Length: 463
Image (cartoon, rainbow, N blue to C red; front, side, top):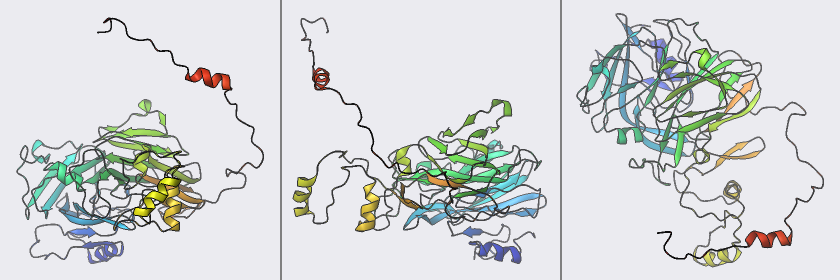
């Protein structure tokens, strides 16, 4: 690769939904060319053709930022700017991001690399970039006002440091954080080990947990929301917009997850046991690891989990907070389980002709009713629960995807292989027959159960 992206690589990137900016090369002569992405699809890994070798990561619903070598320094160019991100098919959000996307592209370097990152601010306010978890000189830590002047709109700052420790990291602004992180300004960083044979894996995924509060029918997040978000996302995508993680049977798999939301997330994998092998602080020694199927990732934390994908199938992979696998839900809705709504529907229908009774037997009927009616939704709004599997409605949203383990995939093949074909005798089935009556309490027992003994207060001993 030449100092600037070669013509061959430019077209290779353009074909993958990534393109060099049209900004004048004369005006940007001293800067690496700007590379942007518009597609929300997972891009193929960016294999290094210059600098130290490494095994690249796959950014879920994202991509890695190309670089140029300049006298032994690996140079990147980040551009903070307003972007439009498709959260899932049928909904787009007006966010802030880097190089055309939120989150921005993953930056990949190798332990010991000397790194120079140009950051251009195209936002309407000042910004900065903090290299979360990286051991850097104080003046490169990116805290506006404390360790550097903020980057004014239209200006470009330069960050220079050595990538001293291998591991999984994040980058995000440290200027007006409440606004800028709520608008999606963030990205992932991977420093690969100097020895490519250190803790090798066959497939290495990375994504960030983030969340938004976007009212149905609108496009811009409510940045003052503290906890009551209605869109829980991975790399600013919600199910069914999150791509599956496709792996070959018996691949050793690493998944790196960073949390830049306002709460913790217990991330749960079906069908496999894993170990937490990495944190923000580095690799966990083998003697300190233990098997898990769920790992709780706190705010501002990074976790790397590893496992052998030895169990073929389509396995759910999700946050275990049940509201976090829903989309655009209203939280202040009364519980109507078991409430007979027949008369109520008649009365309300006189005022609202299209009113539908819901919640009497649960909320899963929302998917059926939406398909039949179809249920009208405000513009640019995702259903609360959605998604189809080979057996019907999945009734999920938010932080949910699947790990697809298959035999016979080629190395480097990440295409969705479709639904899993279950071997004979391995699929749950319906029991046909008479079920025994469950035991019931006797009438005598029911009377005793509601008997209440009351002790009336006397005197003032309790005061």
